[in-house]
Length: 392
Ligand SMILES: Cc1cc2nc3c(=O)[nH]c(=O)nc-3n(C[C@H](O)[C@H](O)[C@H](O)COP(=O)(O)OP(=O)(O)OC[C@H]3O[C@@H](n4cnc5c(N)ncnc54)[C@H](O)[C@@H]3O)c2cc1C
Image (tube, rainbow, N blue to C red; front, top):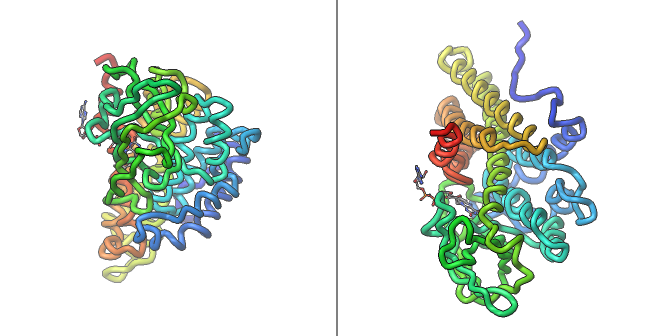
């Protein structure tokens, strides 16, 4: 009998083309050669080196979807999707994926979409080169899921704004050169009173309060930030005043899709690890894969990985076609993040004591995956969205 180990290799299918497939291989090789050998060291240090942004910029990975006129590669969102999936599939830790992903996937897209030509030059072009690091600041100590209740306030003054408030859980927050930051621009705030300002680290009153300690994603920096009378010039307003809530919602769709792609990549990797380990490890005189209990676990992992992939690719196809993807993206995010936690947990079980050790990276995969049902909108919020979309 021929044994086919289905760990995710596929003939190219829409929305991917052969060119995307080649990019997949290039990114996968780069991650295996230049990231994986250092991941443990970076996890222990609590951050990966800043040089990695430069290197990724030099190779074109930070500007895949941006036009060549701005220093990008002239690709599309599918190129960025490949980037998100392969970082995880090839074994970059969740922290590396998060640090690079927050820069390319959530903080620079609004600058591209809503920024002026002058903002593109000041912020996007150096970000694509990996020279200026970007972060997105929405969450506050008192406002996470309830985005509309943010309290950071920008008071209009002659020539700009004065910002007071704080943000927390900000990925890249410690090292970001600029922060794409949600602020209230009316007293009441809420859906019609939120705007985006680009805050720069060197602005007086902008302070990194704490580098936060986390369960997973350990090689990414996560910060609490505070702003005391930060003077922000009017040219740092991103998009229209008081239209920021729409920007947040638009950004969420891509962020949730990227998180789904990351989980798809991680599940692919975990499936491969489980198959390989179970085929080699022996107990009671046979490979543990020959025990039905283990074989069935791996079969279930394969199903979860494939369902996650199908939901995510379907949402991606519709996203790039410009369709309304709220349902598709929400379903993909909800399913893949929880599935990835379950898959990582089962994988630890299959590897037994070795699963609990650092060596195989599955304990880290479990810790990293646990962020998925929380970040970018929690499972409960995803269910709320889907329930309401069903008219309930
Ligand atoms: C490692 C990490 C990195 C992050 N990076 C960023 C970043 O770069 N930028 C950024 O802006 N944010 C970032 N976040 C914040 C993240 O998006 C929020 O943590 C998330 O949106 C949840 O908000 P919260 O933590 O305040 O939880 P809360 O909103 O306080 O929720 C607490 C619990 O209550 C539940 N709950 C809340 N409302 C409802 C409801 N209506 N119905 C049912 N249950 C509900 C939640 O589901 C959750 O279980 C990051 C978070 C982490 C942990």
